[in-house]
Each structure stands twice: as C-alpha cells, then as structure tokens.
Length: 265
Length: 265
DNA sequence: ATGTCTTTGTGAACGCGTGCACAAAGATGG
DNA sequence: CCATCTTTGTGCACGCGTTCACAAAGACAT
Ligand SMILES: NC(=O)c1ccc[n+]([C@@H]2O[C@H](COP(=O)([O-])OP(=O)(O)OC[C@H]3O[C@@H](n4cnc5c(N)ncnc54)[C@H](O)[C@@H]3O)[C@@H](O)[C@H]2O)c1
Ligand SMILES: NC(=O)c1ccc[n+]([C@@H]2O[C@H](COP(=O)([O-])OP(=O)(O)OC[C@H]3O[C@@H](n4cnc5c(N)ncnc54)[C@H](O)[C@@H]3O)[C@@H](O)[C@H]2O)c1
Image (cartoon, rainbow over all chains, first blue to last red; front, top):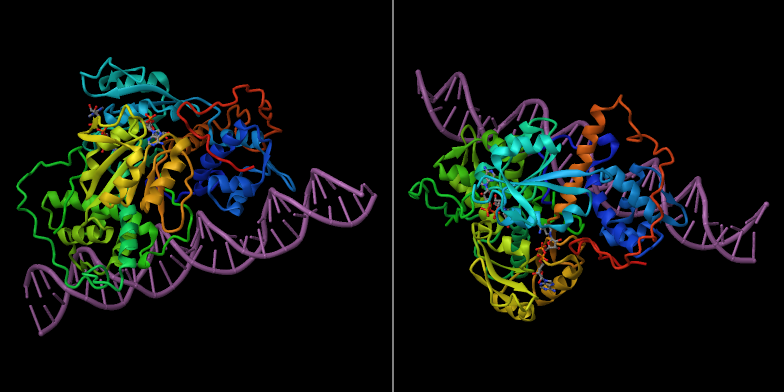
C-alpha cells in the first residue's frame, strides 16, 4: 500500500469506510473497460474478479453508496460508472499543480492518466531558473516564486510534490499556506500538515523494501533445513554494526536527496 | 496506500504483522537520519514523531522483532538500524529489472533511492528495438526478447513493470515464468499471479481519486447550508448518464493505454 | 545499596475490515 | 399468475490492527 495518510481515525466520510473509498477507483476502472465494450450489466461476481477482490466485499462496498443493483441481474454498468464517478468527485474538474519538474515530475506531467479522469495539470512549478519557461509535456514550467499566485488564481486544491526530500516539507508548507488541501507526495519524507489537509504518499523505496522482506522469507523457507547461518531465530548475539561516527562525511546525502542509505555490517 | 497486494490472509510472516512490515522502512529511514547525525540513542516517543506514528504502535512493532530497547533510555540507533535492515532483508543485494523504459521507466532507472538500500538495477528492458542498446541513466537498455535470459543469468527475483497497461499482464507472466517472485507494478491494471508471487502496485490515478473524494467532501461540507444541488442524500432520481454506446469511438483507450484490460463476460 | 525517575514491553479493550452464508427481491418462463 | 432460478444486500462472526494504560526494568544519582 503505497498509501499512507497521516494517521487519523480514518472512516469518517459520511459513513463510507476509507477502505471502500480506496477500492472505488478500482471498480471504476473495471467498469469503464466494460463500458467501452458496451457491456450493459455486470454481476458482482464478474466485476469482483475483474477488480481482483472478493464479491461479497464488492457488494458491501456498493451498499454504502446505495442500492444500485438489480437482484437476479446485476449492476447497470453505465449507471454505476456515473454513481461512482459522482461519489469520488470526478464529475468536476480538479486542477492540479506539480512541484519539482525533474525526472519524475516530467514523467508525471506527461502522464495521460491525469487528464483521463477530471484531473487537469494546471501548472508545472520548479525552483530552477533554467527550467522556467521551458515546456514540458507541452506545458511551460513556471518558477516557484509564483507558486502562491498560481495556486490562488487557478483555484488549485490538489498539489503533487516531486522535489528532493530535503525541500519537500517547505514546499508542502507553501502549498498549504497558499490554499492547497490535498497533497500527493513522492518525496521520501514524512510531511506534517495541519488538520483538514490530506496527504497521501507514493514511496517506491518502501514498496521495494516490503517486497524484499517477503522475498527473503521465501528464500529462507525453502532452504530451511539447509545451513541457515543466522537467518532466523535468536540473532545469536548478532554482531552489532561497527559503531558509526567514523563516517566523516557530514553532509552526505543519498544520490537523490533520499535519506542516505546505510549498509550495516 | 498505493499499496495493494492480491488479497490473501496477510499476516503470515513468522508472526510479524503485515502492517508492521510496511512501517519498518519508515522507521529505518528515520533511524538512518539520526544515525548520520550521530545520535546514539532515541526514545520511542521521539522516533515515533519522526516517523509520523503513534509511539505505542512503534513499540509494539519493535516488540515483534525482539527486545532491542533499554528501559529508561530508549533504543540504540545503530543497533536498531542493523536489526531492521536485517529483518527486511536489506543486508543482501537485490538485483532488480525494470521493464518498460518510457517516461516513467527512465525516471525510475535514474532514481537514486534504488541503489541506496541494497537494490541494484540489474537491467533495463524494453520492447522497442529503437531503444535497444541506448543507455538510460548509464545502463544500456536490453531488448525484451532477452528477458528470460537476463532474469535467470542475474538471478533476479524482483521485477518492476512500467509498461503500458495493455501489455502488463503478459510482461508479468513472462517475468514470473522466468523466475521472478516479486513484482512492483506501475501500470494501472490488476495483475493475476500464481501463489507464491507477491505483487504490489503503485497507482497514481487511484491516489488522486482518493484525494478528490475527500476534497469533494471538504468542499461540500463548508457550503452545506448553501445551495446543495444534489451533493448528498438521496440521489434524487439522479439523471442517469446519457446511455452510452453512442460514443462511436470503438477502440478508445485512456490517453495512455490506461484501463483497457478486463475480460469477463 | 537504595531510591527515584524514565521509558520500555505488553495485557486488554475496542473498532474496523473481511468473508460466510442466507433470506429476500425480482427477473424470467410457462 | 405462479414457480423457479439468479443475484443482490446484509446480519453475523471472526481476526487484525490500534491505542490506552501500567507494571516491570533498568539507568542514574546519592
Ligand atoms: N525518479 C524516481 O523514479 C523517483 C521515484 C520515487 C521517488 N522519487 C522522489 O521524487 C523526488 C524527485 O525525484 P527526481 O528523480 O525527479 O529528482 P530530480 O532531482 O530529477 O528533480 C527534482 C526537481 O525538483 C526541483 N526543485 C528543487 N527544489 C525545489 C523547490 N524548492 N521548489 C520547486 N522545485 C524544486 C529541482 O529543480 C528538480 O528539477 C525525489 O524526492 C525522489 O526521491 C523519485
Ligand atoms: N508517466 C507517469 O507518470 C505514470 C504514472 C503512473 C503510472 N504510469 C503508468 O506506467 C506505465 C508507463 O508509463 P510511461 O509514461 O512511462 O509510458 P511510456 O509509453 O512512455 O513508456 C512505455 C514503455 O514501455 C515499452 N513497452 C511497451 N510494450 C512493452 C513490452 N511488451 N515489453 C517491454 N516494454 C514494452 C514501450 O516501448 C515504452 O518505452 C503506464 O502503464 C502508465 O499508465 C505512468
């Protein structure tokens, strides 16, 4: 789950559980595909399979939205697409700004998935003067000095942060101060925001580490009776890593502004 | 959570809850930062704040790993970095292949966060012959014909998919057949894989839609007593969308190859 | 050695999310 | 109009995850 809001009791949204909200886009995607193939109706079982979830879960999810199905038949695809879109707020236009037009920011700017669902890239913002004015994906990059002006003039409420981690918090603060109330953060940092502002993060590094954990378990399990050095069980007084501090490079940073690695032992 | 595994009972990993595993990288990042500032020890309260979680939760998470703290003092930073790294399997080298070197794939290839924690980009793979041999981020792109060879020769067990959605499943199938058992999917599709293979997805579009949902609620709440057209409550026989099918563009696809997947019916 | 003070580790309670299983709804055919 | 058959909507139980609250552990000073 590259997800991650800043804690909070969750489940608050007019009775619709957070877990359900997170699945609605999945259903919508599957439904859109059916719609394009002009499939008129779909059963919970079929749709659940397409979305990769349990059919009972899907029905319960839909029950939070209302009774949009017909027993013995299924759900009307078009109608459901409309209802979910409306519930997710996709029937309106959402201007979005992307801050930090580097490798990732540029890729995001050119991402078609943005425009496909009511999201419109209103502006690209970068602090590098050399970038200013240069078009990326057909949109001219604007300088971060104008951030506040851009946000307020275009009525932007959603911001995407793709800057180095070191400056993400200050960029976030400026976005929030300017009126942004939803932030999608790609920088590997924990952002702190005032109440009323939502933050979601996408963190490649975390996802890989989670995969590595499971990968390690798989590998350790098949070669269980083998010669497990210290794979599991008691760390066997595991040699504590050489006490740091000797690493003289004071201001060292990961190649990208990421939190510097560390390779114990 | 741009997260998302293919359901499954979760919590299986030698007693360590899945939710805890997902937070370990967060702790590790905070600890690494402390380590570089040569901070010797840290309390659960401090570390929890840095990681953006509840301190009781953090302590319970660590308790699954063992008793690595000292009451009255806190946790030894270096030791904890080592323990978590070991638990996550970051003390070993993980060769990773990236398939689909387009805008996103290229950005990922150049991402420093990869190398920073034991992940090594073993190969970049693309189906476009024009890309073959061209270096991206210093690594020459290889043709997808050689996918199987690359996987087996380098002993790759983690694959990243950054291809258009339409081919993601077949790319996935080839990766799995070649021996990959962990996949990080950036394409907006549900991948189906055999048991024993882990899939995590990062889906920008879903994250934005979740933000939009909450954003809509915020907006609808402040202007509650206003002129709510049909914001909430009974959809008031909500006008069903103009019955589709009239949209002549048969083979229409999301501007990016988004969605078209699905195949029930 | 003893007392104090800090902080861990965890028992217990609670709430959310999941999935089973089934009654009710309604379509469809005769 | 009735019987049958499909599929929804949901009551219910269970398990995971979160959080509170506190006893025990141990550092540190005297
Ligand atoms: N590249 C990836 O695949 C990838 C993947 C996951 C996460 N990330 C994260 O995304 C972020 C960006 O990655 P990248 O590879 O594009 O880095 P990058 O260095 O290529 O781009 C960063 C951009 O941010 C701009 N910038 C710096 N300070 C700024 C400020 N104060 N205001 C506005 N713009 C500012 C820079 O001018 C630069 O153009 C990093 O935090 C990285 O860790 C990247
Ligand atoms: N660009 C983004 O910011 C972004 C964000 C989120 C998700 N995505 C998703 O990531 C994927 C890639 O996005 P992109 O913008 O880089 O697209 P892109 O078109 O720039 O790149 C796709 C690349 O995949 C290659 N490819 C096609 N078929 C292949 C195959 N069978 N085997 C190997 N390579 C193949 C193509 O040659 C191309 O280089 C898409 O599914 C997109 O929806 C992109």
